[in-house]
Length: 324
Image (cartoon, rainbow, N blue to C red; front, side, top):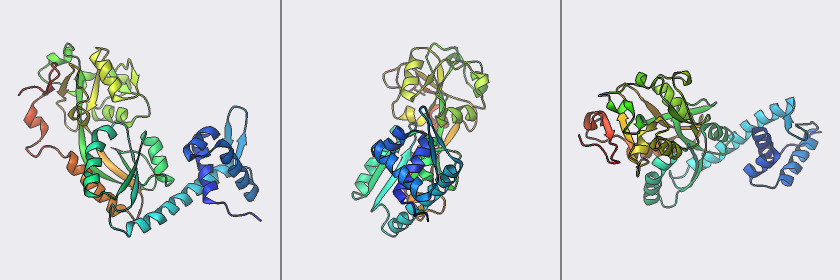
């Protein structure tokens, strides 16, 4: 007769299924590799089936292993929701929350947000993981995270989302670039340009191209970067141009450079910033309150749309905001 698996065994198995590597899975679970291997052997012995095939170069999840991992992820998610239901019965922001944030949002939104939370809810504990959308959504589905702050849309199962605000894409280039001589610039003017983008896996890359109605075949990509800061330095070195989120410009990512920033004369050249949580989470009302706080800290200037206030030129090559 099979013995019931423990939650710890299921968590370790799901980590192995995600990373397909014992060392990386153990690291993700914050245990030694031997502890993880022993737990897997105990689980296989209790169930009487082989879940993982081990070779010298890789590991392979068996058919029944894939089925148990899928069921295990749902079980772990339900357990997290059970705990969340208890948390939801308390006053909002009185317990703890585990949130995932993508790298192209975290440094521009979190500082002000964390300060606000600290002042208003001193007992609230917020644990933050910064990672790519793919990794964060998986962690959300398995119950490792409670809430995500990311760019929407992003494909995930059994989740709810809420749009918070739009973040405009701006054109950033060296002042000597031919595009700066044009009285106005539209997205189709970028076709054929050397466009610097983040490497594959960063949703900013896809959202920027989609917002500009461009595809990779429309542009030349001389360099794939891992961060916006790297791209900024490449643009400053005249290696290409880029599309940069306005929230990054507002937080002085271009400080110390002579990069020129222009607004694109098209509609909807932006990405949607929003929240994602598990479907039917009992903490949904608390997550929406969290979203309200993020929205208020990042809403546009009350005086009106930036395009009406600042004109086409956002930042001159002198390194200072352009006079209008």
